[in-house]
Amino acid sequence: MKKLFSIFGNPVSHSRSPLMHNSVFKNLNFPACYTRTHLLDGDKLKETFFTLGLSGANITVPHKEAAFKACDEVRGFAKKIGVVNTLIEENGKLIGYNTDADGFMFAISEFKNIKSILVLGAGGTAKALVNRFLEDDLQVSILNRSASRLAYFEELPCKCYTWDDFHVQKYDLVVNTTSAGLSDENLPAPSEIIHSILGSSRYVADAIYGKITPFLALAKENNITYKDGADMLLGQGVLANELFTDKTLEKQDIQREMQKSFSY
Image (cartoon, rainbow, N blue to C red; front, side, top):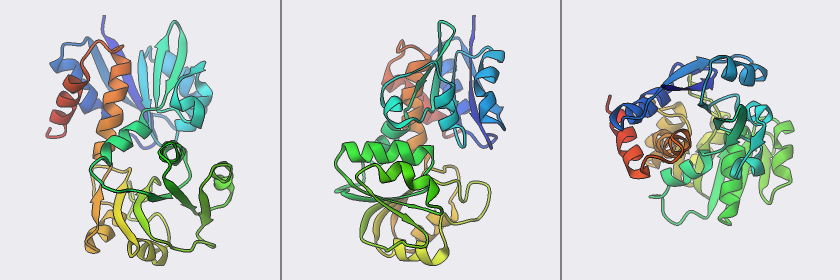
């Protein structure tokens, strides 16, 4: 009997996850299918998951914190950060994991000598990445529009700024975790702030993939080495697929088939 998996998000039509996971299932003969679920209300996530009869799911913006609340049990890194991006059905219960952070570390492995990082945004992806950076003893700063979402980060050993009190410093890497540029042409902060940041940074990364966001376009103009979210997507996808297939497939085989899907 085929297992069914899905990605939950709003928006979700742009997601490459179905192509990636279905490429693995088809080419490695694993009896499963992966689809998209456009979910408006994160509070309906658990109900929708079981109504659809899913065996597992990925969670994208803006439902990663709602997914944490929906779980019967949370394991590993996700428990530490309160953010879930991968769900598994296990004996009628919803088990939560987070593969974002290790997926991102995979993505930036070719960036050398990273010691200081500025994270733009303060949502679920930012929580995952900031905690992972701190595990590696990196210097982390967070910049967000409003102070209210910074409360979580102020309990951590990192610097927190709003647009109103931000003072630019030198950064090895700047990471955009906001949705700015996903379905619009917005920057993740006011233009003058972004220009000052890019003038003081060595590398730039954006969690958004499949397009050159206005943020990445500015990085390119400034001759800064940059990455979109494709490698992060691949990294977290490989780890999620291992969970979906209960580690019955080899990691290198999953990665190979997922990489092929990027040429479809």
